[in-house]
Length: 251
Image 1: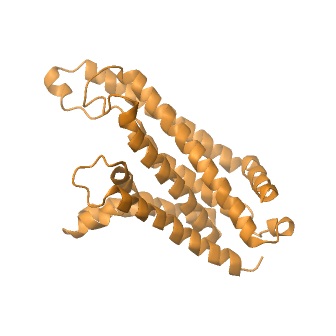
Image 2 (image 1 turned 60 degrees about the vertical axis):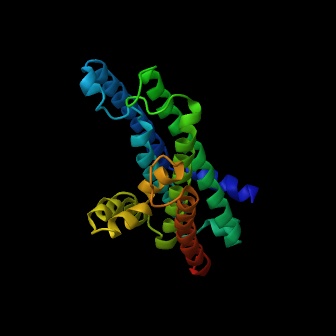
């Protein structure tokens, strides 16, 4: 298992696409910091009546969906970087190979997600200073931990979803498109459904599940434990599909 994990790590860090995804995440973090700074500057220059209407300057709200997508793309890349499954020559046990890929994606997702959230929240906090709500959505570290934990969990899940889809379709491009539809396409459509379907359908979409897991939405359709269960179900279904495909397909 250790050797299989090391081999998968070497492949991941030597593929240019993975470097591009990390660079893209860094650029998004920089853009988020600039956005947070601009919001704070606009807030300071506005009268008190207008200040009360401002949204939060916390850039992690913007960073999280992008991080979800990029880590999902990374998961798809881990699954499809070896289209002919030449790794089976070194690791004939397909279950062990799958375990190594899963462990690698999970580790990368948690590390990248935690780093992205820490940097975005830290930079936002630096710019917000001691300004009151609504520009600052939390007063201390304890207030932001539920959101951070939920966001990192969602990034972990989307990474595994990308891995599962990549194993199932054996195409990075197709897997990335499907992830984009799951994260952005369908969630943009569900609010347009007639009630109560719009609420019920939106409640199980990944972008909304993050807020429900964090417990920051009043009268949320799903409780935090139920939202966690739905997120886990996303990973189980896609990974399960990818596992069946990997175990049954020809090398």
